[in-house]
Picture 1 (cartoon, rainbow, N blue to C red):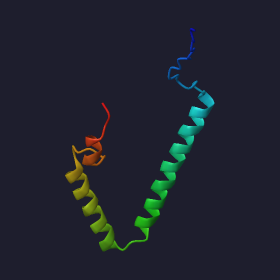
Picture 2: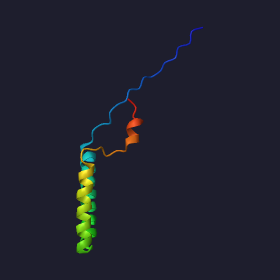
Picture 3: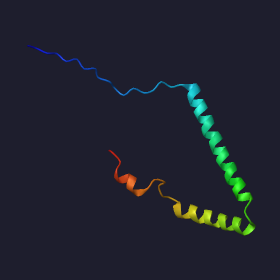
Picture 4: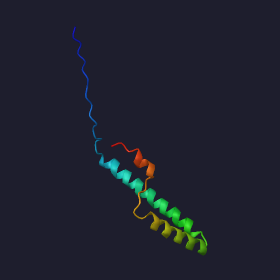
Length: 82
Protein backbone atom coordinates (compact mmCIF):
# COMPACT_ATOMS: atom_id res chain seq x y z
CA UNK A 1 0.00 0.00 0.00
CA UNK A 2 1.58 3.23 -1.16
CA UNK A 3 0.25 6.47 0.17
CA UNK A 4 1.32 9.59 -1.60
CA UNK A 5 1.15 12.89 0.12
CA UNK A 6 1.23 15.96 -2.02
CA UNK A 7 2.33 19.06 -0.27
CA UNK A 8 2.39 22.45 -1.75
CA UNK A 9 5.52 24.37 -1.15
CA UNK A 10 4.67 27.95 -0.46
CA UNK A 11 7.44 30.42 -0.80
CA UNK A 12 7.31 33.78 0.80
CA UNK A 13 6.13 35.96 -1.98
CA UNK A 14 6.58 39.67 -2.04
CA UNK A 15 3.43 41.71 -1.98
CA UNK A 16 2.63 43.30 -5.28
CA UNK A 17 3.79 46.86 -5.43
CA UNK A 18 0.87 49.21 -5.49
CA UNK A 19 2.09 52.65 -6.46
CA UNK A 20 -1.11 54.36 -5.39
CA UNK A 21 -0.95 52.72 -1.96
CA UNK A 22 2.71 53.64 -1.50
CA UNK A 23 2.05 57.24 -2.50
CA UNK A 24 -0.83 57.58 -0.03
CA UNK A 25 1.29 56.00 2.70
CA UNK A 26 4.09 58.52 2.14
CA UNK A 27 1.59 61.38 2.16
CA UNK A 28 0.12 60.22 5.48
CA UNK A 29 3.60 59.90 7.00
CA UNK A 30 4.60 63.39 5.85
CA UNK A 31 1.34 64.86 7.17
CA UNK A 32 1.90 63.16 10.52
CA UNK A 33 5.43 64.59 10.71
CA UNK A 34 4.16 68.09 9.89
CA UNK A 35 1.43 67.82 12.52
CA UNK A 36 3.92 66.68 15.14
CA UNK A 37 6.29 69.56 14.34
CA UNK A 38 3.41 72.01 14.54
CA UNK A 39 2.35 70.68 17.94
CA UNK A 40 5.91 70.96 19.26
CA UNK A 41 6.20 74.50 17.89
CA UNK A 42 2.94 75.56 19.59
CA UNK A 43 4.11 74.00 22.84
CA UNK A 44 7.38 75.92 22.67
CA UNK A 45 5.63 79.21 21.82
CA UNK A 46 3.53 79.20 24.98
CA UNK A 47 6.57 78.78 27.25
CA UNK A 48 8.33 81.63 29.07
CA UNK A 49 11.69 82.92 27.92
CA UNK A 50 13.59 81.11 30.70
CA UNK A 51 11.80 77.85 29.96
CA UNK A 52 12.56 78.13 26.23
CA UNK A 53 16.23 78.66 27.07
CA UNK A 54 16.24 75.62 29.39
CA UNK A 55 14.50 73.50 26.74
CA UNK A 56 17.05 74.54 24.11
CA UNK A 57 19.99 73.72 26.40
CA UNK A 58 18.60 70.33 27.37
CA UNK A 59 17.90 69.50 23.72
CA UNK A 60 21.48 70.35 22.77
CA UNK A 61 22.83 68.29 25.68
CA UNK A 62 20.62 65.33 24.75
CA UNK A 63 21.74 65.52 21.13
CA UNK A 64 25.38 65.61 22.19
CA UNK A 65 25.03 62.62 24.53
CA UNK A 66 23.11 60.52 21.99
CA UNK A 67 25.58 61.20 19.19
CA UNK A 68 26.83 57.93 17.69
CA UNK A 69 24.46 55.74 19.71
CA UNK A 70 21.70 53.45 18.52
CA UNK A 71 18.05 54.40 18.93
CA UNK A 72 16.98 50.93 19.98
CA UNK A 73 17.54 49.63 23.53
CA UNK A 74 20.55 47.43 24.23
CA UNK A 75 18.48 44.38 25.15
CA UNK A 76 16.86 44.24 21.69
CA UNK A 77 20.28 43.44 20.24
CA UNK A 78 20.46 40.37 22.46
CA UNK A 79 17.31 38.81 21.02
CA UNK A 80 17.81 39.39 17.31
CA UNK A 81 17.44 36.20 15.28
CA UNK A 82 20.38 35.70 12.97
